[in-house]
Length: 538
Image 1: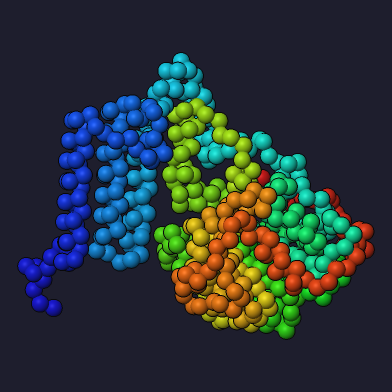
Image 2: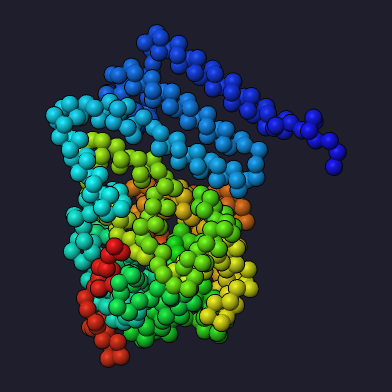
């Protein structure tokens, strides 16, 4: 192998050059900062954490904030330039990001002039309130992000009229009351993610996708997944991915067909719900069945090759650990899932609330979307362990060789018309990965890219007149997502009207709406939103 002791460098030449550049930039920035501080010429900061008058009016605090930003920028550059494998570099950068965000001077009372000023103004009352907020969150084992008492499903969330027409241990199926005397011939079934409550699609009336679809004349059904708990009298903690396909999605499709007396439905899947839905349809096709005429996938992975920042959690050790912990039974808790997703964006979803709730003693404002986000669900352990290994780790679903419910799953058999939506700033399902579904599905496709993130991009009511979306002519789907975006046209406002128009074209003519939501075979069980959605995870 030769002598490596004398000739081997600590860094390859290009890495050494990068390191020298980072060191030089750091020294220059640091010297400039000290010179500005000595002259009393420190500039105010635009960073929202340090942008208030209290920071600008405190030379010591402003100096600390400037120094922190220089150090954090340097550490992040060092992590990105480390001479290690790409996977290790991603983990290193993620770890550095966590430490950098945690070390911000705004997170500590003694170095946060806003908190000190508020303490003096209130005579210490803000600290008392902050301590009470902290103790409250310690008892609940999670940070409070919104006034959760302001919202409740069935009261001011998930209030679109309807009824539960079917239930089993995994899910309830809701059918919504038509808004007029007629509905489109073919009903619409919505399959939400099972790691969240379904009412993200039915928040308040003004931003409810369900309500908009009902008012547009669609006969809408919704899957409401059960939230399993450790103290359930009839536990489902051993349920598998196959169970969710067979007794969840496929059963919901069959019931929706039976209740509406239609041979096919149109179906929408959101996030994990979209992955479940596409898998179920591939299983149905393998059985010679064709129960869905048109498919909608919102921010959905079918190809898990590029999972963005979530890659830092994905390796064989993690998968094997989950197999051992949860593969035979148990629960993947909502608390653990929530903590994981919060620390993907710690500045916004963790430390922002530490400063406001604990240091300033503020009470979070009421916000329907954050209230839904706090209303998490547990998952059966075997379901989660299978999902983690076969999708995020091994990316088996897209291969055509993985068997589910005794059938080989091949997404290339799905040749129905499909509407694919992705969000440009999505950190959970990167939009290029959602676009990769265009290379798997074989039917006529429409791809639409919305502004904002994973949830805010989807829940974008036309009534709010916010954000926009990109689209291209049908059939213009190059393999490169960047090329697609380069030729796409931008439209202002919500993508919902575009989708509803597309859906109407695939839903047949109008038929008379039934007087009853249920049937003799499937009588109504209880009013929407049903019992399952009201079960808390803890």
